[in-house]
Every structure is written in structure tokens, then in C-alpha cells.
Length: 364
Image (cartoon, rainbow, N blue to C red; front, side, top):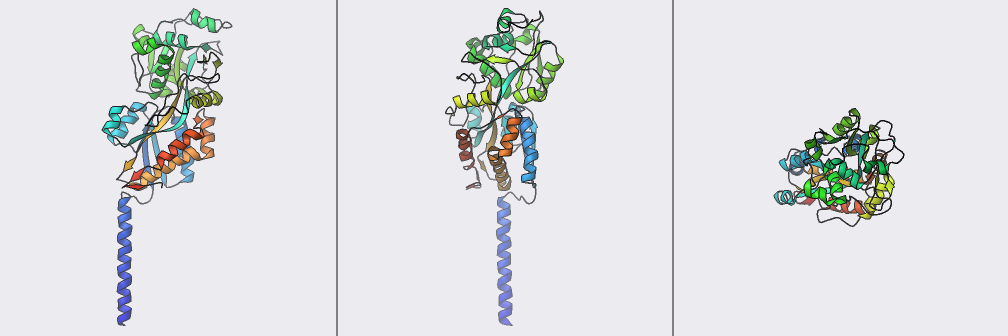
């Protein structure tokens, strides 16, 4: 009888110890049990593919719900610094001041995409522009469609004597940063007089023929509804809305269109250009096939998290899946994005292995 009682007491002690350990582990995961919800916000540039990936991932991990709002790169950066989201999307780079304020932030290139000039020009199925003409239009110096600089590039087009309406982003935007980086790269005058950034003062606005649109969708809609207009959006928006896209003369002097081949060529030209923050610019790339207005779109995450290890692990797993799953890559390509080449993808995966929660690697 005594032995029976002692055995029962021993089993009870072991059970209590196991419960305590389990409770401690759950506390280390921020008390997370059951479904996990990840919230993100930021760039509209990758919004079409993020929406698709989120739906696809639901079949891979049904207990993980991911929400992403396209509020612009500037909004995403502010949100993750304010602690209102678990991750942010951004096409523009964090500043040194932001890294100094929050040292554990990390930018991870996820995809590359092309920014393309879109236009609403009746009876013009194809249009060719080059760096100088693009700068002239957005600087406000070229104001008519039949300007000699445009006519020279399009000898087979009958260009109208109509004022060019310039459509640009009205919100802080990584797409704008990529686009203005290109304009500055092909003409230093742009850098001196207008500058490069998520938002700039557009000369066309001061001249009275510029309008703004919120997000890539807003610019796309404005161009579609405004005859004789020109704007810039991410390639996926031009494709999905069937808006005519101009071809461009690239740095090698060749006329190219935005597609997977020309985007991959641009990425290859800058494969070794990443800095210590794992960021790189890929505008005006050399090479005969390179599309000149390119940019990586990034996810911004915390490298150290002491609040919720289950959520941290779920976020890392989602990013790993997006970078390595063939179906995810195929979906991105079909939407007009360029998946990372292996040498770039491996750098991102290596960085993911360094993410910690409570001092432990979440993906050893």
C-alpha cells in the first residue's frame, strides 16, 4: 500500500513538472497557442504577389493567417518602427538614422520588379522613350506629345499636338524612389533640381499639368482615365490593367521592353552590389538586355524578438517558403516579377538563420 501511495505521489510530481515546463515554453512563445496571426503593411509595389502568396500559404499552414495592407513604403517603415505590425514591405531603403534608432531592423530582398512608363495616347500601340526624353517630360520641359525629342524616337507614329499630363504618386513610395533614382542616373540635373526619394516636388505640378494618384493602383487608374497622360507603375499593375507600356532605350543604347529576360539581366549586372544592410540599387544597369528601371522589393523584419517566438518562427517560415517554393516563384513570374537569382536568395536565407527569439535562433 505504501509503495502504491509513493508511486502515485511520484507520478503526480512528474505531471506537475511537465505542466510547469509546458507553461514555461508557452510563455516563451508569448503565450501563443492555436492559430497565429501576422500583420504587415507597406509597399504597394509587391501587393499583387503578396496577396497571391498569402492565399497559397494558407493551404501550406492553415493555422497561420497573414494580413498585408498596401499603404506605401513610407507607411510601412513607420508602422514597423511604431510597433503596429509584425513586418513591413518597402521598396525604399531605411535611413542610417532609422537603423540607429532601431538596430535590430533588417531589410530582406524578396523579389525584383520593373517600374514601367505607362501612357494613354490614342492610336499609339507602341511608344519608345529614352532617358533624356523621360527626364524632359517629368521635369516639365517637354510638354507636348509631338515634341521633336519624342518624334525622333518614334518616326512611324503620328504624334498629336496635345499637352502631356504627368501622373505621379501622391503618397510616400518606393516606386517613386526607384523611378527618381533612374531619372537622376541618366541626368544629374534631375538629382540637383528635384532629387531622389519616396516623395519629391514634381515640376509638372508647378506647371499645371501634373496630377497625383495614391499607390500603384491610383496612378494606373489616373492614367487610364486621362487622355494624353503618362505615369509610372510597377509592371504587374500595367499588365493586370492592360495599360500600354513604353519601351525604353537602355544604358547600352538598345530598345528594350520590361519582361523576365530584361529584369533578370539587370539583376545579374548588380549581383555583387549588396551593402552591409543587404540592400542594393539596380537602376540603369549595364548590359545589352537590361531593363533600366528596376528595384528590389524588401520585407523589413526584427532580427531579435523577445515577445512572441511562435509568431517570429511563423514569419521566418513564410519568408523561407516564399523564397524556395517553386509554385511561389512561378506565381511571381506570371505576375511580372523576377524571383531572386540563387546567389541573392542564398544571402537572404543565411540572414533568416540569424533571427532570434529570447536569445535562441528560431531557424537553427
